[in-house]
Amino acid sequence: MPEKNEEKNKKDQDSSKDSKKKKSKKVKKSIIKKITTIIILIAILAVVLYFAFRTLRPEQTVATVNDEVITNQELDQKYSQLPDQYKLFITKDAFLDQIINVKLLLQEAKKQGIAVSEIEIESEVNLIRESSPTDEAFEEALKQQNINLEQLKEQLREQLMINKLLNITVISKIEISESQIKSYYQTNEEYFKENDISYIAAKDQIKQILLSDISGNSIELYINQLKSNAVITKKGDTPEEKEETVEPKDVDTFEEKEGPICKKDGKVIVRFFSTTSNSASNWISDTFDDLAAQYGRDIVAYHWQLDTGDNTLTSTVEKGIPREEVEIFQEYNPKNTVPTYVFGCKYVRIGNAYDSLEDEEAEFKRVIEQLVV
Image 1 (tube, helix red, strand yellow):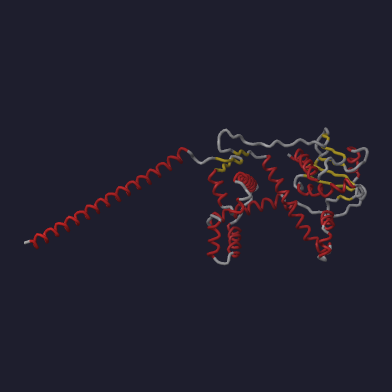
Image 2: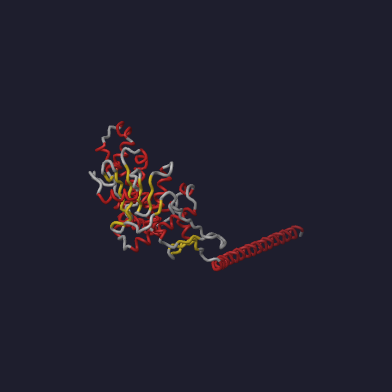
């Protein structure tokens, strides 16, 4: 009998343990179910709040360019595509200025009917593919730039349109004179002689260097002209922030004359009279010649050397100054001294005014901008 009672007690204990295990499992399942339900509710609430937040705060417009909107989403997306090393040097606000420039150029390209074919785009894509060792490397490069193939093609389309526009309106109109090439060679003569490079051998290389330098400045000027004819607004993060405007500086050192602006073929005529023996003329000559090349699409420029009769801005060497040009020089400077500047027959200056070439160039730009607007 004791053995039977002991066996029965053991069974009761085992039954009690099983009951506790089952109860424990039920409790655990209940807890897990509750936790899962809470997680689902939180997820649903997050989605609801997300869309409610988007409804309350729509995409913010950070700038407009002739009524074309730039949103904070577009700015963030394009800024994120910059390599990290570039982000160290360009702020998001400065990058917004670059986007504005691109918008202006694309709008002007479309206005002029400039288009890019799918064949041209595919050709550029293939060049990029060929520069990658494998297709996998090409795909990885796209991922690193945070873009896909379609976005790459759109970027290439825009870049090709801008390149075509700038080639037509700016670069094709830049002329590099013989005197500019000679001046560059003479300035760097020590380098060329050390490397046994003659002037004839260096000419083409020098021309490309000068073209690159001048085209950069010319493109900047072209964009500034597009801006002057555009309606651009930049908005801050808060309604209280006002749009910043930069007022053009006045012309300080030129005397303004009465009468019409003199032009040729619809372009303002800009004249500089100098002599090869005058140190003040020689000091400023290259600066004027470079600036004349930068504004080549908007002005007709002459740099007359009174003692040689040459216009340094042409590739040929003139043997004499036309009579009407001499008369203009004498009209605006009866004392016949140099250097003399006659910009558009509207602004005149005798002599140099600043100690630095940078200040002289800035003043020349201000005068020209007044005339070509």
